[in-house]
Amino acid sequence: MIRFLKGLVLLPVAIVVVALAVANRDIVRLSFDPFSPDTPAFSLPLPLYALIFASVAIGIVCGGIGSWLGQSGTRRKSAERRREIRRLEGETERLRSHVAASEPAPAEAYPGLGGNRVALPAPR
Image (cartoon, rainbow, N blue to C red; front, side, top):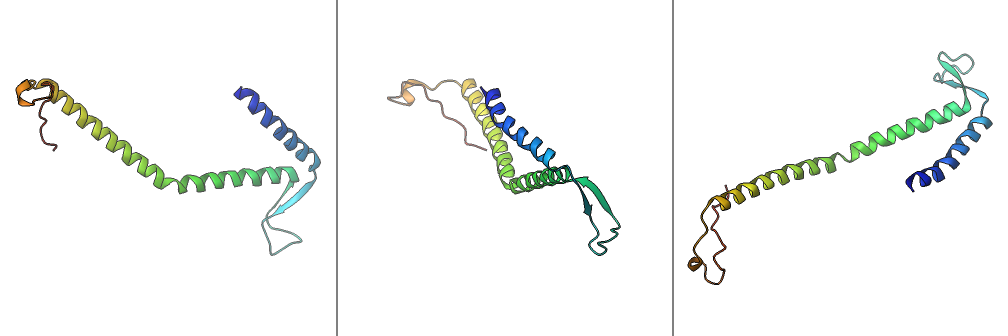
């Protein structure tokens, strides 16, 4: 099902990309020297579609980097919470092993509870 949906989305996108490349095959000059328009010091003759595709790719990369940097606080909180979960799981296991190792309290110590309670040590 997912493969079908990918094909349903990617096939029209591929058709548009190929049509754009075929329609914009003319060579354009990309110049990085704004001070000498007649003979630029550094310029590249490129097909227009290559320039458009490169611009889109650079935009995607810059957007991904910005998004990744913007989520640093969320990643930090997630890491702190994972550490806290590990610490609490370890403490839970320590308390469970302590309860299992200790002797059960007599039923008279806790009336009405059936004698299934054990006093735990204070947390450290």
